[in-house]
Length: 536
Image 1 (cartoon, one colour):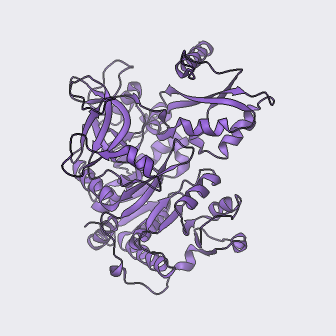
Image 2 (cartoon, rainbow, N blue to C red):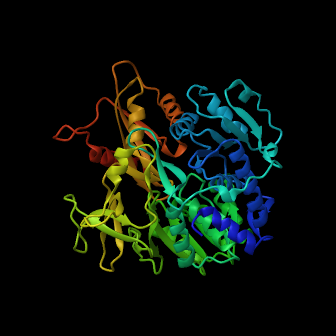
Image 3 (cartoon, one colour):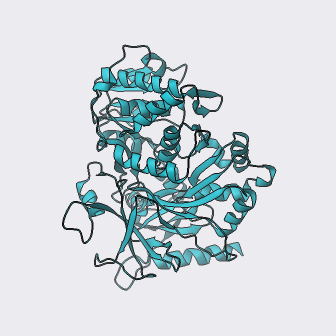
């Protein structure tokens, strides 16, 4: 097997009647998932979707969304998941930048995009998922809208004639970008399949596993949930979006659905440990927990360990550009609440090394350097951005004999006495909040463009529940006063919810260092002192 969609075909033969996906009160077997994705692929090909075309998926997690991603790949195309909660202007940018001509979405999804205007949209066909749909608004535009129900029972296409190789792109995931627009990370079938093969063997995924799919499709954690399950014939249980804000109900879901594998950002588990009333449940089936994206406070790890006695717990480290590359198994937890969990050691089929500011290998334990990842999982690059690709995907240091591309993470790390890697910080201003990677410069650019703002700077304040709180400081211009509520509304129109600042502080001027640069450290200390004073 050399393509991601081959995993489904193989499992549909081995386990035709087994539940592939269970969502709410509906399920689909492996044989039906295979046949429906085949039929969708045939429809896309009849519509003119060709090898390498990008097809968008603007849907919440559902059976239809999983059918869609397999159908798109079987047609030889690249699936591009788009966050349904993102501002329409951001979704429209992705559609335009990736030249998406076919989109699978909901009525709300397409309506929100059309509200931003039809101009420059490359769309030709839109498939609307949902019942009792009125899509008359779409008829005003230059593309055709049909419902999910209308695409079935057409003439099937011989999918064996579709030529795709393992080095072809399978999907594009968008992350926060320093230029003010999201970056599209291009992942090949080989990139993803290398990770899935390794992870399913390393964690011994079984056919009887019930894997919770918490991460949305546009988040790279979904790769393990979906393709890891399908490779082994396990069952995928998408977690309804609303459960993340109700920790007790989420704990109930994990227990009552017999979840055996949980994979999510750390902030979800911190809220579960803090407010999930875990003592009410047995969690007899839960055997494996992965968390990533944020650091987990030791006090919450102790709560999880207390209630998940039979569960193996791992801290997972990685980036969209190279997938999960390192792991740290949680054993005995030190009594110090300030203990910082290591990011651990490389998975099999991964090599990592550190570079100093002179691009030289760091050789001594305890010495800090930028982490560089080498693996067949390293992505193809950034969609339509050769400069950024050349900057981050580079020839391996010290190798001038043959081509060996590695990924520079931008993370500063060091090794401890046990040989585990410890995260120190970022080279740039990128942070993680609520499990999402956030480029603070993107928020600053948006704020700086607001008419009443002279300058803006955004800082990250560590928070044990969500990883980092995003705080904005702005210097007002001479044009008038700033209404903070209106400013936050402005931010929400252009940024995903997790990137909107939690608070905005207005200053006459921003503090400076002796070199004239904005003094971020001073602002961080000022905020911490102010917060500490108000909380005592």
